[in-house]
Image 1 (cartoon, rainbow, N blue to C red):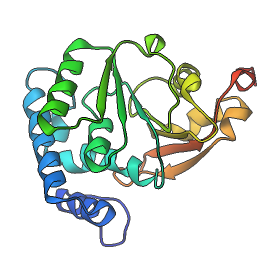
Image 2: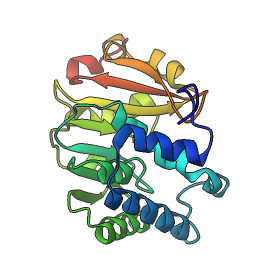
Image 3: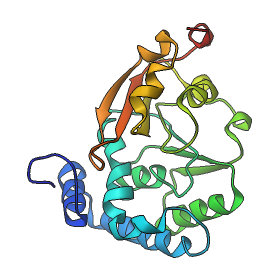
Image 4: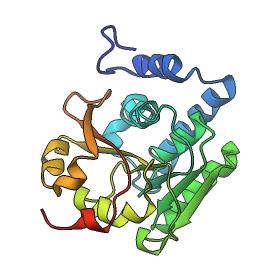
Length: 220
């Protein structure tokens, strides 16, 4: 990891941090390597990640996803990843943990990729839901993540029905996290605190716990 325990700035630092944080088995390392290779190959066919980020894939995508699992220490139950796209963070979390994972993605080609990766890597605890979130049957979530899904207020409103009193929310919101949080109704704001990203000095992650119900969806 980085010498000062701060921002990860190189592929070697990202791998070192993953080793320190999760102690992956030989099999898990192989799965991560294979996922990374499949992601790069598929990116030639459909735009899953920005091509400019491929040289720093382990920092920008693998470690960036894994840091959400690190923030969910002790978490349990179904993990729902909204707008999973390239499987970030969902497939990374699924490789590094045994948590049952529901990847919600409405685009057919991306769902085909997600299923292909899960099948090849033997991730039997991964389920891909090919539909808009509004059409997904309500299930109790232990964790809800969304790396790039929707503006914060809409994201929470759409996913509130999956939350329980113990649900953990892990929402990377980039450089606008604090501004987006400030626009929420106070009852929503009170569920969250802000964590610094390990992979981008300017990015933040909104971390929350609890159920969001009808009364909290009122006006400010």
